[in-house]
Image (cartoon, rainbow, N blue to C red):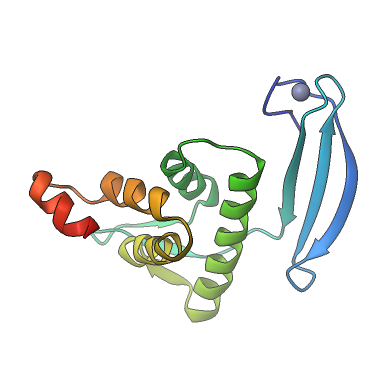
Length: 145
Ligand SMILES: [Zn+2]
């Protein structure tokens, strides 16, 4: 696992822990070059979850893609925000998989917004502004009020 601060490829695991009812292994890693510490999560991938898009076309759910979109909403990415996003995705994916093997992109978007709204007001507004096509400042103001 590459250090995401200095990009050095050698990082060592300093702590491993099983979380989420044995579904996830949380690893604390340290970069052997710059000493930066970060957390990674290893888990069974979401299989067979199809995303139904606005135009009714379907595609496989892509955790990485969703994560990148959420990361954009967090102005400063650090270990804490990374951990929070991973945790949030774990919760959401478990919920989605229990419900059905299909989910609409709209539902994904709504669920992410709901969690952000509760816990991360600033990323919430950013995430919403990326995904809602605001027609003007008025709409944006109406939305955040
Ligand atoms: Zn490093």
